[in-house]
Length: 428
Ligand code: TRP
Image (cartoon, rainbow, N blue to C red; front, side):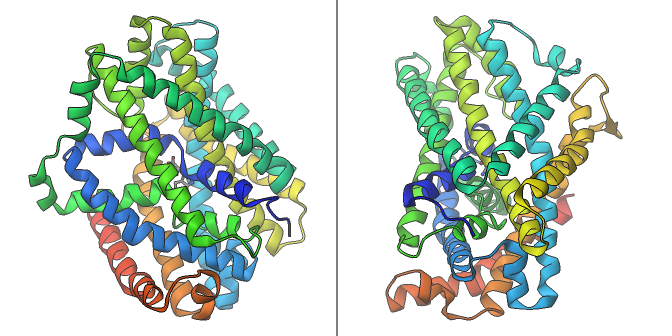
């Protein structure tokens, strides 16, 4: 099995997986809808008490068993393998529509470089989204096909530092804007009454797992390529802090822009592809900023997509005798087939079910329910059916810290995830 060439390679790849479209616009929208600054309290708690412990477990299991997700489940018991495949399937579906959005960011990057002003509705009423989706899928497949060191590590070592530089420039610029203060108070002013709503806590948990890419076996897969010396706890903290920092900084600059140019602080795809491009047009050097913003989004999306595909490719390689090249081609093609309906729902074909776009349906069903289900299976199987020593062997912490960690993973996390799953099923 291949290994990362260094600890930095691993950390950058894990940051690449964590930092994605979710940090840049999902976070700001979730904060806005759930009480502004007050949301940060359940969010930080969810990150610290739930996401980080599960991240530690995933990395420990991956490195200990040195295998892909399906084989790791198989080691816990042959009957659990099916859970591994289920997680791969959920991830492949999430990947399929994630690549559609990656394609949009690519299109808008190209538009800003060429100085074309194309309204989102005009863009989606053409066939351009399909072309961009295919390009994004093929680029993702090609990088995974090149392997852990020559493909993934190489691309993240370039894109992640580049993305951080762009983000810092955007933030420094946004501080000088007149809308910075009102933007920050919209983003951060707390409405504590929101904390009484259970939905806010469930949103915090969902966002924490989604943003850190925890609970989907990505860190099991990436952890399997990790050398024995790297400190897992330290790495997990670096990844978490980087992910939180990107979310906060991106939120700060987005709301500063929104308030400076009197835009609607609405969220979601509309904010990134309609509202902000409108703002960029009004500002000096707007074209350069638009290009920088979409380059940031595209880099973040691509490195996340790579991690989702790698989990599947590793599983197929581990469970069959297929080569990396064949597995990458096969899974990229499958991802394209599954993603095509989502892609066509935001194109001139306008594919929808009862008026809902397929992409939105996928996200609201599998994207929303799939994550807590997968995270639950990982926490449950790897704590109750594998050797209890995995954590103490791989994560170097004191006896009492270990007891606390086990308590969280054995009881608190499965119970919290069950509550989230049930509440989301009821909402569907
Ligand atoms: N964390 C990424 C983001 O913030 C998205 C992502 C990557 C993801 N891998 C994942 C989400 C696995 C869920 C599961 O955009």
